[in-house]
Figure 1 (cartoon, rainbow, N blue to C red):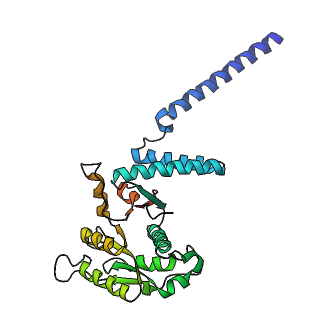
Figure 2 (figure 1 turned 90 degrees about the horizontal axis):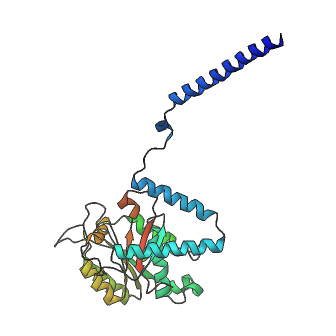
Figure 3 (figure 1 turned 90 degrees about the vertical axis):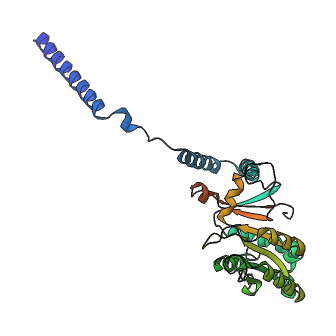
Length: 282
């Protein structure tokens, strides 16, 4: 009797093992090795994964280590961009908002033109108000944003009034009607100086919003150097600076450039870069 039970149990056990083995084999056949693997990533997707991984890694570092880590990445990236766009000996701002870099430049120039701005605040500006020049072809939101934010970065309740922005007309007789009229700009600068105002920044375009026209950058550069005014250029035509076949020849078409790298490379997560002459940076 015991022998019969052992034999029946042995047959039942062997049947169960065979049944489980057959189930595992069938499940392996249903799930192919290829269906469980991740899809192939293109270079841009791999770059996005790497950047997100580095950001997650940096989020867990100690503060002192994180500062050294961030400084190293910032310096290496700035050096790479300076050689790519031939804008040597420059510093850079990295930010999410496309206008934030211009605001930081305005703050920097306020400190340069008004040495006591930090102590006196608006009192330093009331006697000799600053002036920002922008073409009428440029979006009005740019200068409005500057007026709301330029001083608010220093004093939370202080902003520049709209009278500090002077629209410059476009050409009406010669050249494109979307380009800034340099003669009119020169006349405005002389008038503002005569009225005890301080010309601060000229916002020029290398590729206007509507038709992609480029301002007369050489004449603007000469004019700004003559009157000691900061020249800032924005526009998608700046991407062509990286395509010149003479990489070691420096380009000094302006004091600062807005470089929307994410738009040009098709990677929305990349920040906007403002490269600028670090002579004035403190």
